[in-house]
Image 1 (cartoon, rainbow, N blue to C red):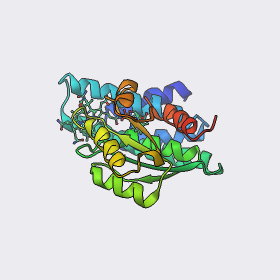
Image 2: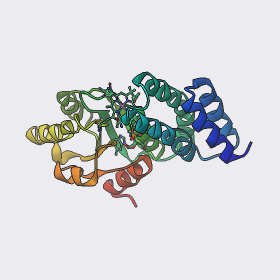
Image 3: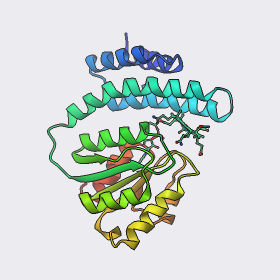
Image 4: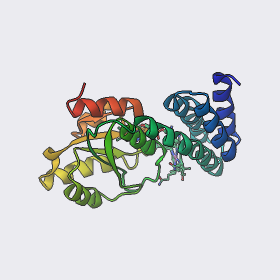
Length: 217
Ligand code: B12
């Protein structure tokens, strides 16, 4: 089976909500020496975004969206191990605290960003999903990260990113770290408006901007 065929099969497996096949194909792509980051993006994330669009247009049900997300998670888990393995020997660049804001339970994109930052040499402290603002503040105090990553996939929860930055300011913590924001509705313009240091459209650019903010490259 050629590399392109595998990607196509992955797209189909996501569309058929086939967790086992997603896992199997992810394993096969690793055996073939394909770039796990490319596979994650083209094989799985792209297919899920398309399904999200159909959901947005009311063409499919939420149950189908959940099933597709689970299939992607199954495949991503296998690829994440390989991405981490490939980046394992790098030096530590800094500590990243990351989480999805309160009211939002989307975590697939955040997990990919975490995995890739980890592979690039960052230590990751992942607070999970639906994280209240005060928890972000407490954890910044506790862990003193170099970088804070805030994920929001919903327009209704984007405002929490601003709330967190404001709360850090009030607690005198804002200048102790760099802040990056991301998620489907988030933009460069929004990042600037709320006083974040950076925005990234996907995990590769999240790594790029994080390295830049740490004074690397
Ligand atoms: C999968 C999915 C779900 C899954 C989530 C499963 C999970 N474990 O995460 C489930 C089914 C649970 C779900 C639920 C809901 N969802 Co939903 N979901 C999606 C979907 C299809 C894909 C998201 C995803 O995983 N994409 C793949 C990953 C790889 O991409 P990503 O998340 O964008 O992440 C990348 C970048 O954004 C960036 N990034 C992400 N985070 C961060 C953080 C930092 C710091 C940085 C730098 C970068 C970064 O890098 C990532 C990697 O490339 C999107 C559609 C879309 N276009 O985003 C809708 C979508 C986000 N969901 C939507 C909605 C409405 C909902 C629900 C309200 C539905 C409902 N009626 O109940 C609930 C909300 C639940 C809640 N309270 O959070 C809407 C949001 C509309 C809006 N503008 O607000 C969308 C856009 C679908 C749509 N078109 O209507 N959803």
